[in-house]
Image 1 (cartoon, rainbow, N blue to C red):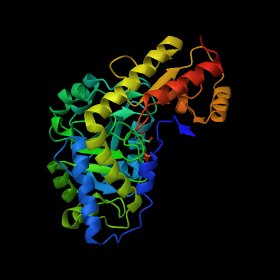
Image 2: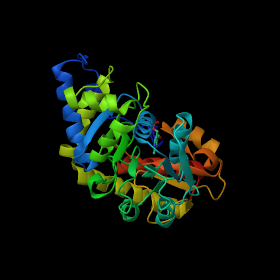
Image 3: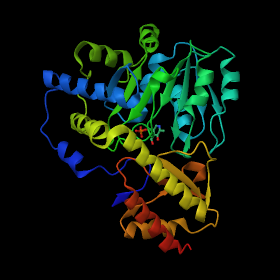
Image 4: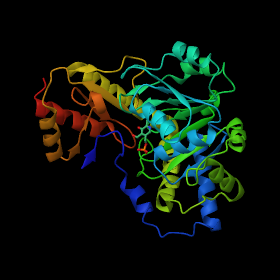
Length: 355
Ligand SMILES: Cc1ncc(COP(=O)(O)O)c(C=O)c1O
């Protein structure tokens, strides 16, 4: 089966092979070397010299850990889809004081509105989703940063769960304090490991926030990472092997620029295909490089398509949430090739008899 859903993605056989290595002690020198190796390489992919910690949880775990460990006063959650909304849910469940602003599905974050909200000076943390996987909007960090830089006291938490490894993200170019990401999307790994980069200001804030829970306590995780390059409980060691190996592949073998270029090429091909046969949900300039949301404007039968694709060995992705009935998503992330994508789109054409 080939997964054309926006995560988890297909994992290369050589990466799976690396995961079959025997375990090591999570209190050994070897694991410290491994954790250090991973976080050093992740810095290159995130474009940062900030410290990075790992978390043995999926992306949501790191989102929760960051928000609850860093909000002292009040958070501003800016959302343009289901994953942005998730930060607000996290705030509610943790009794973190938060305000929420939602842009319409398919629309990017409007920097002017963001600025007007920040100007109220009520907030000490802000959450933004870089690549909103539920709609296929990739917010423009250059555009948003013009506003973010005007509010140096607000800690900015950026979710890059579905963009890191698929498009260039240069954290140090922006006023972004915390970058959260996860293993199972554009990095091309199994789920279960996530990561958080922390600016000096974020590390300082960790000292001041009183209630942080236990497992998802960023201060505990950060302190042990600093002291020993280890994780407070038993981490997902197999995925750590895979991540270390895959980061070498991404940085050295494929090369970061080539990887981003390949993602862009796949995205452009998909957008052109979608425009030829259907409509795109997202306006130009904000279309994601890792997935594309297509409007099923002819109202073709998506259940039939899904079933037929499955018979051909493909897992299809409908739209997310409210968008489910009239859109579908095509993921083009991780180690997916242009030839594989072309075959998939050709199969859709055959099933729906598109001309
Ligand atoms: C943008 C974004 N943020 C957060 C998440 C949640 O990540 P996880 O499922 O790894 O907890 C996802 C998952 O699809 C996502 O796409």
